[in-house]
Every structure is written in structure tokens, then in C-alpha cells.
Image 1: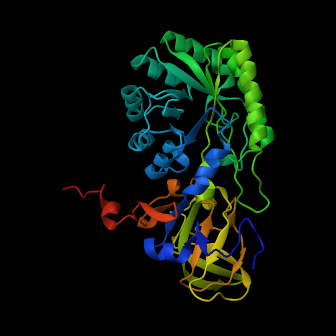
Image 2: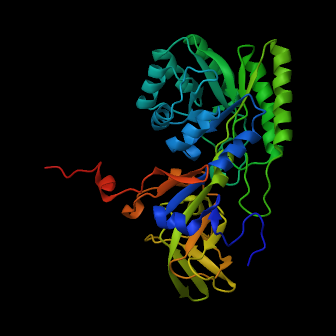
Image 3: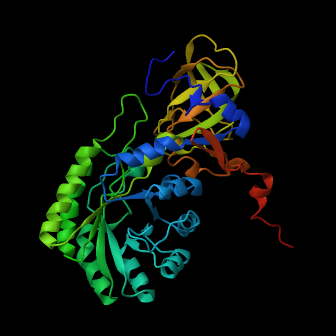
Length: 421
């Protein structure tokens, strides 16, 4: 068996509760989140003045509620996420503001909600300034700046540089200030985010770019946001960013701006993956074992409709086995896939769609396969492809497993559809 201490390939429990019992109680596939892990990651970031969770990573309202109780506020990127934040009890009028809308465009529904609830906007495109200013002049706004460079674990998660659609190009700050003045809008906050899963060297470059951008805007700036992108381990050789060092870089930048502006500058961080990824486990049942040439396939009742990151980015997720009965001796190299009518429905693949093998314990049909580090961008990206029902979600809190989203039903699948006369 694997000797890994970080990601063992045999798993009997999650937060003290039996994996098999959880699968039997809630069915498969199901997502299970360990709240204690989220709480620990929140504690890691307490040095920052404000922790603003990027809820697109995992937006279940029970998770949002528990974060709110710990003093975390949220970022919303759509009208739907604004509704989720409101349902979870966040108030846009608190200090720090409980909800901030961050996007590169307004659709009409989002603009209406922003105006109705007086939600601050983190502007990602110059046109948004005019669109907001025409209906809500005189408000404070933030600018999300694209500093001209980016980084991330995949080109698809790189959110900076000329190939990224995100943010206001750093050379257009003056144009944004002119537009803001036209509508009586004041730039009071500045934000940068260059990508997910980046490293300390690239993250530190953002500090320098932020200082230059803030100097260009001037003394109206009272808050800076370090954005997100903090990586978490998915493999045994992965490591965390040195949070103390990272905070120190941003704190130094903030202090220099305070000295230049003559007033306090608040420091926010906007984690998504960092808070929730490690808390999550996707439980699936092994439904078939088959030999295809030299490849042994473990086929599960979960597919890329449940967890799309491998097919999207070639993302790696640790995988473990929970045996129902006696364990089979030994390991073997297997390909792990799902039930969908797609050749790409493979969890063990590299970017570009290349099928890879994984060394896992021998298992039998009926055993539970656990896809780990599955709390971020997993259920949130799930779909009804192949008319599959979306999975249940479960939160472990205080040693108890609590259902926070029931499994979908045929009625849910068809609720929005109709056959016209």
C-alpha cells in the first residue's frame, strides 16, 4: 500500500466518520465537506484585515453561512451569487461590506441587484463604469486591474496578461478615472488577481504592480485587495505558500501606501480554493472493473458531470479506496473513469486529454472510491450532462454529518422544461 502521509490510497474515515457509512447513508455520488478544515484555513489568513471568500469555488449556502459566522465576507460574480449571499445572511451595508460584485460585465439582472441593494462593484471593464454611473451616480467603486502579466496552474486559470479577458488593462486606468469623474463615482478600492494556483514569486510581483496602480489613482484609495490564487496541495510533492511571508509582502505595500496617502489603507485577501478545496471529498461507488488491452479500468457512478476539473484542465485529484469488506492484497495501475457516454470521462488524465494510470489498491465492485481535495470548483462546475442528477452535498460539523443539498430527482431535472401546444 502507499506510504504517503498526506494522501494515502486507503481511506476508512473522513473527520472520524466511516466513508462506507457516509456512502450508504447519503448515496453515491455525494460530496462531503469537513467544516473543521475550512475553519483551519480561515485561521491561516487572520492577519489580513478582511477575508473575502470567492464563493464561485463552492457556493452552497450552508458553507457560506458557516463562513459568515466566522467573520468572512464574500465576493459575488453573478446575480445568482448575489442571491446566494443574501440567502446566507450577508449584508452589503456592513463594514467591511458583506457582498462585493466582481465581474467584467453587467448583465441586466446583476446591475438591477447591485443598484437595489447598494452592493459595491469591483469594475473589470471600463464600460461598466458608464453603465453603473448612469443608473447609480455618486457611488464608491473598485477597479480590478490587469497588471499585464499572469500565472496559474493552467493557461485556463491564468487571469492576467493580454490573453486574459479579466480586469481593466493597466494602461487604461486614467480613462477609467475620467469616466468615473463623469458620473461622480469615486475609486476607493483596488484589486488584482493574476491566476489560480500560482506561486510566491508571481504573487509578490502583484504587490509592486498594485502600488504603481494605486499611486496613479491617488488618495481616494482606502482598500487594496490581494486577490486570490493561493495554491493548496493536490500531490504529495506540492506545498503551501508561506502565508506569513505573503502577508508580509502585502503589509509592506499597504504601509508604503498609507505613508504616501496619509490615511489608513485596509488590506483584503480574496481566497476561493484555499478555504475549501481540502475540505471536500467526492464519494463514488465502483460499479465495474474491466480490462481493455493493457489498461485496467475502475468505472464509477460519478463522472465529469460531477467533477469536471480533470477533463477541463487535466487537473490531478488524489484518489483513495474504502473497501466494504476485506481488503484485497496489493496494488495495481488503473485508469479511473465514470459512466458518461464520452471517451473523455476519465478522472486520471493529464492536460490535453491524455489518459494516465494511477497506482491504487485492488478493489471490488461495490467498494467506495474517494476523489479528494474536491471542495473547490467541483460541485460548483457540475452539470446534468447525460441527464444525470447532481450529487448530494454533506457537511461534517462537530462530528455529525448534515445534508446541505439533497440529491436531484427526475422532477428537478424536468422542472424548467415544457412541451408547448
